[in-house]
Image 1 (cartoon, rainbow, N blue to C red):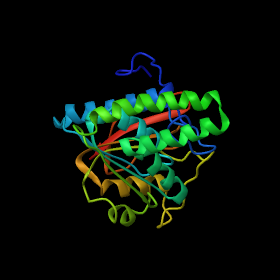
Image 2 (image 1 turned 90 degrees about the vertical axis):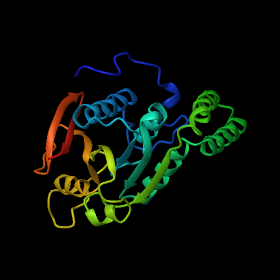
Image 3 (image 1 turned 120 degrees about the vertical axis):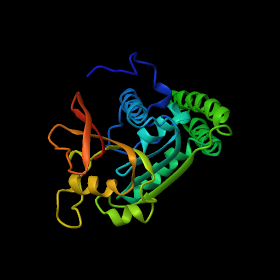
Image 4 (image 1 turned 60 degrees about the vertical axis):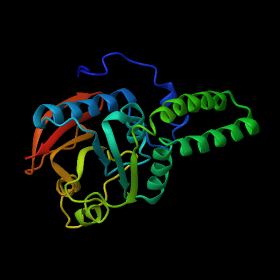
Length: 250
């Protein structure tokens, strides 16, 4: 795969999982550069196919700690009006809310206080680095918070159950779905309610919340087949162990 938008590798150390943003134990973080590339491809398709360039509502139904949603909210705030995150696990949703909260001045101030306390207590160099990164994040967040307000919502739900999503998200209101689905190593699919393939059931559920001009970006391992009769494939590419497929409602 060739990068179209993130052509040069940048220093993303301030955004590292576990430094300022919280990490989910035993769950590898989604690469920052790849997340930014995928999101920008979604934005480009939105513009190319539908001539839409207004800020998007972004949703991840398998959010985990919402790490890649959080970094996208930081890197591409001008292109996002709302971030919605859900997961089947209560602990994941709680951590996702904390990470997404770091996109607000209030949240980053609380994190700075937390890191400062750890630095005072343990005096580790890693805490000093985290404090510097948090200050960097705060400067950017503070400068855009008033001009580009960001709505944030988190909730617990099974992504394969359409009724659970529609209880929390208005029908046909999501512009971009971006999710890294369970691979079976550190995370697993829960059975779909009707006993069907859970990936197929998730795509069926998402069809009810996506706008008619929506784009869905699904990252998976190479073993999982991402296809659904209600969607048309726009693009597919592989990088390392990941396969990424971009879809639009058919």
